[in-house]
Image 1 (cartoon, rainbow, N blue to C red):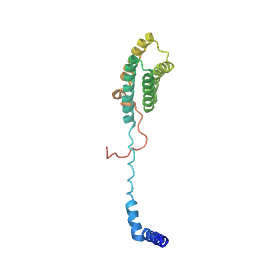
Image 2: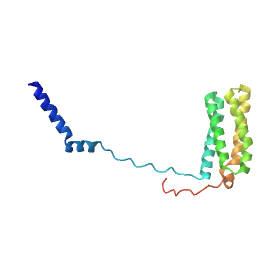
Image 3: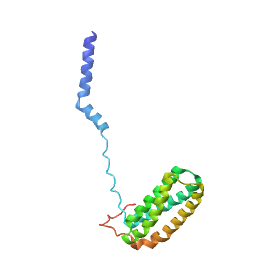
Image 4: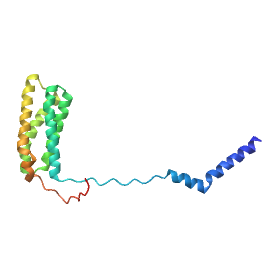
Length: 166
């Protein structure tokens, strides 16, 4: 008695699952809408990138001066390496004449970064280092502010796409 009932129920389940209407209804609920493609990333001019790297450099150098008084060596390493990285990126956007003027300032910051990484900073050297970094910051700001070098930024290569969205 149990066996015919089991066969009947299993056939009923198979028939209900295989009917076209129920499968199409199930698949319709499973279908998801296709995602729209992401917009093409916006390209920027060399002048825009120079302003961005200058701003980043200024922030990181200021943070580096502040971190020298805190004694947090990890923060000092991070700030000095980020400031140096942004100076390098600024240099890439300039014409060769101006790049040569920036190189000694980059070497100076590179030497300080090496001292910080090697942890050769003594308390006496710390005050000298802090005033040296502040002087370095003033020199770069004086010579490489965007309003002073905007004519010496490399021109853009190729056409930038129209930017109708912000």
